[in-house]
Length: 242
Image 1: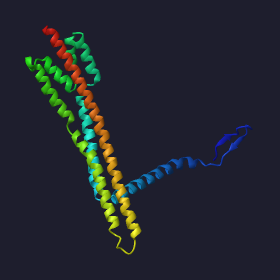
Image 2: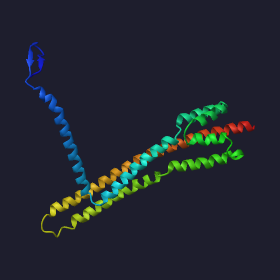
Image 3: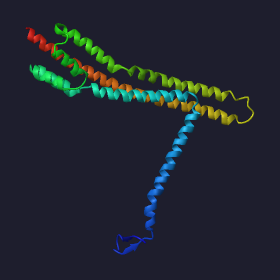
Image 4: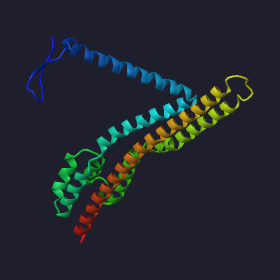
């Protein structure tokens, strides 16, 4: 059974000879072809990983650890970061002497900064509330910085591990000069191993660097929000003391 098409200029009807079964089988063929290509890519990647040498397992562990830290920090920051909008709204309330609204905002919001501000409004710290804020903010910032140090270690360590793989591969390449047969293949394989380890080490370092930079930027913004809110509290306290 064919499909009817109309000519572009003559207006005549043209019947194609493409069977309808092809329209049914074509998606299945493409799907199977996609699976085959995916499996071939996985096998090829596994072969490259094995050619990289023992250092590749250390680099794989570093990459998995970096991803774990990224996921763990993303969840923690989502829970603890009140957002820029909260800081701006709190500052506006305090600027126009709306302490009641600012207190209610801190009580209704989630995050580390609203919790500290709510404790201050509840009277914790007493007359030494400035020292209380400094202590609590230090604890909060240290919790935000937790595990980020390991990312900076991975950024430095991964290229060094890749370089170690490069050196070991080159040593293996030039150690077969006394072999009578297959020298060219062995030397090429050793150089390939060296390049694979170096490339994978750089990829791991780039991944860790991106994650570290992202959360460092978020940490700096949270610290800026904290300073904004604390300065508003201090300014209002000074005006009330005059």
